Length: 493
Image (cartoon, rainbow, N blue to C red):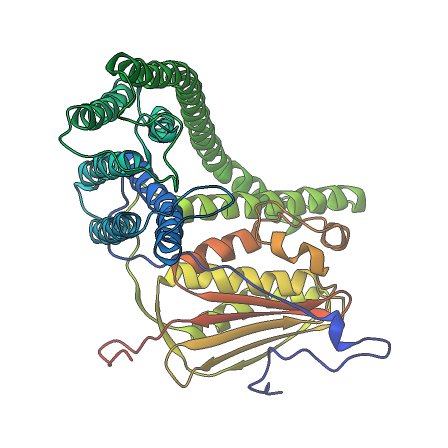
């Protein structure tokens, strides 16, 4: 009998069943291509580091903005701490950092997909570091280059440089910080710039009373501490990077070994296909009586051999199909206009004999519907879904297959059974290779666990949506949503 258009809706609940027993799962879609070449790992890492610096810089902007605002609102300073706010200079530095941050982020976004992304990301990162150190020197000058511990803020950049860069590059960052700090101190001691203070009252030791030797000792202490921090941090970071590189090399070797083992397994599997097909053919000759009449015991044994050979042949064929779908070396097969009703009818006809042997009725309501797909992939999809529906139905049950065009273009194909169903907690794993639920393994011992893995791979390759709605002991509905297509020579929506 014809099936209704709302085929994916589950059947009426049996006594004791509830709507909540039905669970729906949608196969995650692959990310659509954006037309850009994937960036090399180094470029991606450099861009990630540059963005990380930008996120950290927003925190500094917020702190400086608060400090500058406090200085404008309370120019006399805080009575309890005796500290005066930053005022205009702090707000100016915060505005400069915010503007540079927006420029960095815009630059990184504009260079995504560029063939020179690694070089551009490196230039952006070093520009950030140098300009940050210049602005940090302004902050150190206003907070007190010799009277306070403000110069210790250079250590933040030195430590980060040791983490992200090699020892030589982090040393270059340290040298830039030293140069800027010594230039600031020298300008202040020479009277080129007046040393401001953030104290509401003069500090215990003013710059005027500070001997030159003492100032040099304090500046030298800052350099010594920063050099020590650079040496220790760069050594630790270098050891960690070396260990990471060793792990990366080991990982590449493991991946290469795994790929070689997979290729060897595929070759072996392909070589086994012909012998098992021959065994199955010979058993059919024996069972057909072409070599004489067989006794009941011999016939039973030959039937078991035939069933096992057919099962292994199916498993080998599915393994080869899955390997071909995942092969990245071959050229993608062309997409053509495919009439899905004909493909679904062929899948139904192929599994009709197996369904009839178990008293299962396959009802088909197939309307003409066109899509653009790889013809073999569409056939694999529907063949495996109909096979699963038959295999996991109860004897004497019903399998329903529908195909209909979608109003906006494309097509919807649904395959429903009223069989054993799938437990909700196991739904996300049913598309994994060789995975079978305990219920499925008990119901059908000949299952390979590869059918839905093939469905998943073919659907991802063909931009096809797959959703499953199921309930244990009530059945399963698998719905495929195909992209738009049209007959050969007709317009594609």
